[in-house]
Length: 118
Image (cartoon, rainbow, N blue to C red; front, side, top):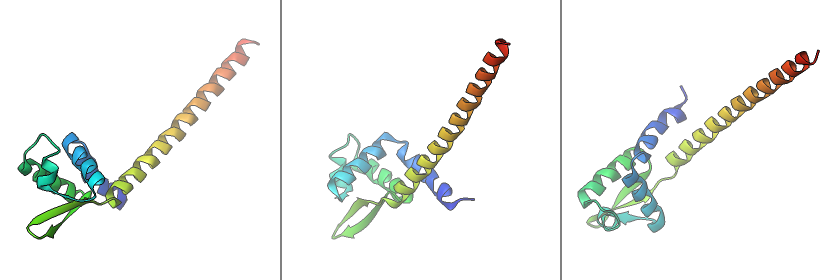
């Protein structure tokens, strides 16, 4: 098994939710922010933001650290970059397969055309 492929499941699950994608975008813009600050940018409660951040943290997409009485979160790019590499590799594999299928279909059509002209 490929550990990189195994690690992207939580990332893809976390990114499936639009609220979590918004949180990730907000953190990317701000650099770091508390759950309270992020809650002001979204139509959900602070408690909901905290739960979403915990899931993002579990997926390796954000990390939180104490700063006084607050926990400040920031984006962690390693998991996201690994997932992006996997998707690029998957897309390239499918491109190669589709191109091979296209070439086979074109050869078949050319053969049929030649045989029809005899």
